[in-house]
Length: 309
Image 1 (cartoon, rainbow, N blue to C red):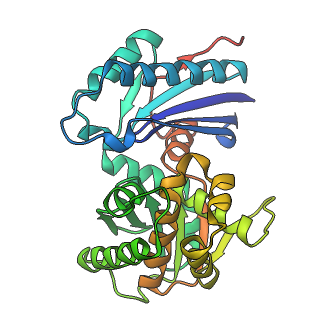
Image 2: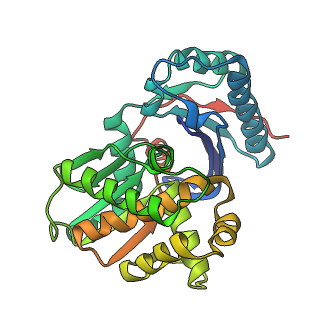
């Protein structure tokens, strides 16, 4: 048995995935994500400050030490396509590579799509299934055939455009709902009934399920994580109206407090759009797809050999 790991650089966070492998079989062991403190202030052509660059370097160092302490043999690294919007981030990645000897592979949108689908290929047996990935600023929809669509809305953009405090007020939530519906209408998506099943992937999908399972007192051990639309709608109302909502969010999504409610509203509106009643939550995304393809010999990528501590 060997252990491999992958660091993923995106415009909102840096993540670490550690997995064990036996031949071509891979099983995830550990996953952690560190949000970037400056994520919500990134915009086109803004250069990162020295302090912001040091933050990325420090996170990288801590992840490498974490991987070493857990007995990882080989460490890989990727950079999200979303980083292309940050001026001169290539120089930051080059700085990281020179400092750590880590080779960072920049992904394009097509490669990310292939990785997401590959990571979630087991769901291809479900008929007429849409795979939904919530990014911070965009939402991507995939099918297991040729369909792909990018919708220009995400939890961070919703928060920045509509929320004045940490959690949306009822009036703000109403504005969010209307904006999401308008965006979905303009996105040239298939009509209701086109998809029978939905698989939600990504960090925000996991946050939605944590809130959902806590609210309904569900215990997750093994097997699929399922959300029912009617129950999600009830949770959404609670997160908008209840005076106790802050405690639920603080307990289950402390790092994503500002994006948690927008993510739930976005999921609810998307499922309403397609009239889908049961949703599978997947914790598999680009990282898992890329690492799985490396382990199975379907992707060539140079890794960094680590010495155990």
